[in-house]
Length: 79
Image (cartoon, rainbow, N blue to C red; front, side):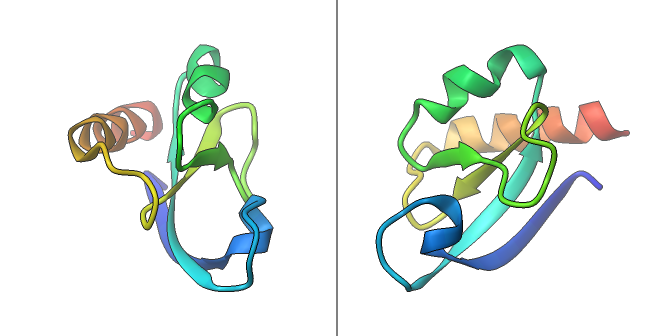
């Protein structure tokens, strides 16, 4: 799996509220997980291995150029 896109309750990715947000799970290099999670809209993977996967809240994350790069990297890491 390269990525998984789904609706997720905000509380499941540690955001206040009960609304559903659109989230994508991406595999990244283990060394980058902590750095990426420090960015607004990126969280520990909701239901994936948290050492290698992140969840990106598509309703919050705004850097679409970087998101495309993360998707490409996830593809490379999983293919």
